[in-house]
Image 1 (cartoon, helix red, strand yellow):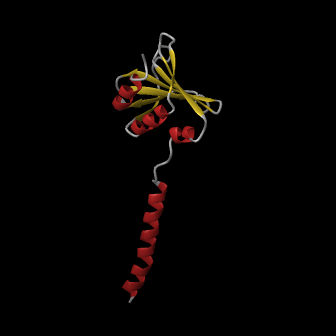
Image 2 (cartoon, helix red, strand yellow):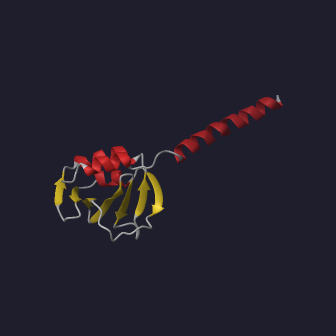
Image 3 (tube, helix red, strand yellow):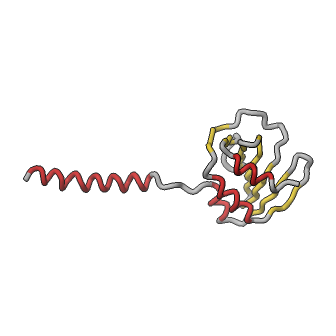
Length: 134
């Protein structure tokens, strides 16, 4: 009888705990989801100063490869070097996606951080982004 009471107490606690863990680990939306809710423009900017207006579908394509990236924290490299950029302009905010090399990018969100965030494992995204430059 005592064993049944313990089971009746422990099982609901375990079920509630599992539900809580699932809710807390639910994937959070990223900055792209926030931009897609707004009016926005997307541009490419080459090191020679060439700027192209890109189709808005570009951002949805970027989102498809975003989940593969590894966030490595602040970028400690040279930000004064010229890198090809994708610029997203929305709601008086600008996000720069700069291609560092074939496997990494940096992101600068002008309304959030004073530093660039460095992402690796970006091979697929870099290949995709390179298609937007002449």
